[in-house]
Structure formats: structure tokens, C-alpha cells
Length: 165
Image (cartoon, rainbow, N blue to C red):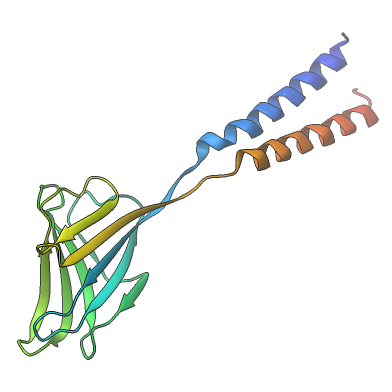
């Protein structure tokens, strides 16, 4: 085997292995939190969804929403996750201006389990739910194999046409 052949095959093998190893680079894009509250005294039913780059592990407040179903005529201004490091985390939905017949400024819902993994959490005696989902983007291995073999083929064609100096 000539020096040129060894260089070509080394480059081809390196590109093929590099493109195949890209599958291990897939990671979570976001964690979505969807809260659903049925109608309670003076406040109609509502729901909201917020998104975080990872699972919440400290007290966090959100003022932007992925989606929201406002309880007419109320306005949800923010949501807060409190005491998330304990076994009974609290979700606070904050209203501005105050809402309902009692001029409520916030609704607090507590869980009896910790917020450590995605899933559906029952809050307030099973009436309210918080669904935590992790969306991930995972490249299809077959597509990466096809891309890698195409690059190897193009490199091989290029090396055959151009003499090595």
C-alpha cells in the first residue's frame, strides 16, 4: 500500500467515524411545564405552559409563556415555582390586577412529591395538574450514516482525481 493510499484511507475512516459519532451529541432542547387549574371560587378555569432549558432545581419565576388560557376577565402576570428542592414544591400563579370576587393576587398549588423527573404531578388534592415534559431532538442514526457515507464518497472521488503532491 502506497503512502497516498494510506493517507486516503485514514482520511476516509476519520470522516466516517466522525459523522457516526455525532449521534452521541443529542441533548434535551427544553423542559415544558403545563399547569391546568379547574374553575375555583370566583376564578374561571385556566391553563398555562412555560419552558425552561432544563429541569427546575431552584425557585424560579416565569413572565413569558409558551401558551396560556387566561381566566376571563383575569390576567396572569407570572408563575413561580417555589421550594422545588423539597418534597412539596409549590406552584404560584400570580394575577395582575387582582382577580375574582375575592381580589385574589395569586393561587398556590402544592405537590406532595418532589419535582425531580418529568411526569404528571397532582396538586391540590388531585384537582389541579402540572405536567412536566422533556422535549429532545435526536438525529436519526440512518440519516447520519447516509450523510457520512456520502461525504466519504465525495472525498474518495476528489482524492482519485487530484494527484497528491
